[in-house]
Length: 460
Image 1 (spheres, rainbow, N blue to C red):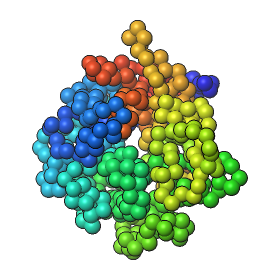
Image 2 (cartoon, rainbow, N blue to C red):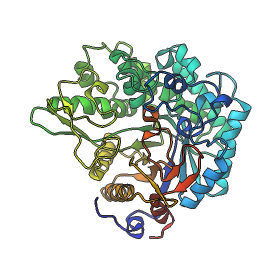
Image 3 (spheres, helix red, strand yellow):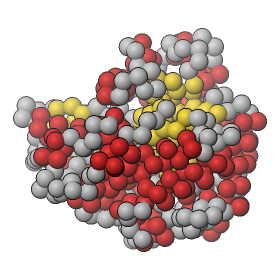
Image 4 (cartoon, one colour):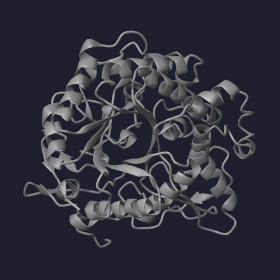
């Protein structure tokens, strides 16, 4: 375990106006699926073996019924921001049309509780839980999807824009496209590499329409959240695969945001799968609709090596199948690893932020997710998680280093407020600063909670 700086030292390395926050997402914590429409994750969870431990959205963390308790925990944490997502099928059960009075009212309540405590709400419109009814109409491949998404964002902006200044359109479109459509290990569980590439593009086009809708509704700072990461070559001869992975992980999305469209390099390296005829000038222009900020979700770097004969298993989601048309290669994380099999490398966060700032010069950045899964245990009513504390310490130091190097980083949100449903991994992976008993729903702040609270509350 790496050495850990004191909370006071860590806080002192950041500007006075830097915002510390914490993050969650709707499907992972809310529960009460009977009070909303079905999402693609509800349908996916019914497939035998799709969720490792068979978990479903109920009760998740029962957040819908425990929202006051959970906001109290956020208040005790002392953070300045809370990033959450709206469940599209809860807010707008039909996928299009009218908002649900009770569903929209829940987020009114959450936002007001946060504001009463001086906590800035950071709202994400879409964190993967698409209404199943829209999926059955074609989902992100449907030509009307950008307009459906814009109407949804317009409704969100009109409802909450008076109190929420920062709204992100999408969370991690790379995951929706490549884990959902290439590998099939996330909802909707499709295995079609050509469609994965088209979905990635169409998500970015829809996001652009959503940004415009949010601005039209009076939202001051619309943005988007991408899971970007630095990609490294481990072996001589692995550079071609490294470049391919970097293009699909990072530059496909940053190029679209910057108005550069889909690069010739991406088109050439994937021409066996698609001719990209679905890309239009209008779509490229929409995807480049200006945003006010970019969220960066970082957990681990990607190390690309030549193919190996060993049966070493890389981390969750780390397989060349999630990079369609990838040249022969293997992904080889170095230790130490989290229980997700992800390499712990704070320098990777610094590198990712510097690379992102170079790709999108001048754009304000947030680290909107960063955290680690470890095998926590409750002992005598407490959870001591020194590895997570070390992870947070190292990555916060890396974020501060990026600021010193000129990266316009405004905030950092730890993932996650509490243990929750880790998507296809169910309850087998725990990222939270707060332990949640899966039977009783009891919340127990971990040692990392108190460590992070000392940073968030601390003075320079």
